[in-house]
Image (cartoon, rainbow, N blue to C red; front, side):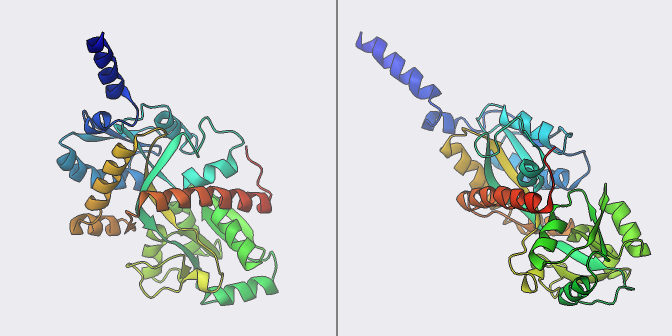
Length: 315
């Protein structure tokens, strides 16, 4: 009888979600980075930069698994429904915290079905102007926009939420011109077809260096443009960085979560990795898991508020 009880206890320990035995089993097989974007984008680049270093640490192959579609919902939902054992992870962008503001119903709960681990890169957003627009700073832009309400236009690629957030905090009104991608947006910005553009620094930096558009400000400090003014100095509270981060299925045992976080954070400290991430327009992340999780919760609420103020109805 005692032997039977012992077998039952050992079996229970082996399969307990938070057990040390389970944690020690990671990684026990290939690890997949699910990318909810098409191949060739920034999320794909982030995964392929850090993947080989994690393969070396974990002694298991780390592979990229693209599952694009529905503004990242398809890939994110796949990870949300995967086994919480650390072998299926998600690399998503700020789209993760913006989707709850633009989708009436998601197939996963962003608060419980997905666990934030840490950011891999942070890329500042930048506001640029065509040289014909008589402004050189964000402060001058705000003054001009208030003097000419609704007369100025701002191009944006992908989501329009960062633009509406700027308008809300700066108390200005402009026309938004949406573009499907950063490429077409910057072509029109350089040609003067839109007076202003807002986008990831990595998308606008070439045009700025060529003098085709004028840099007005960035959302956070960047090694690419260390002297660029911070938008928040003229618009207090404006925080709209683009980031790419690592997530896991909800229910991931704490031991595995900590192991993954610590290994990724260590890889992000390698000088070669940091330089390669900066080459694609990002500043390396790696903040504590609890800090990033709190940011995710806060940002979901922030973008919901922005969408409500802007009158954007979730679809």
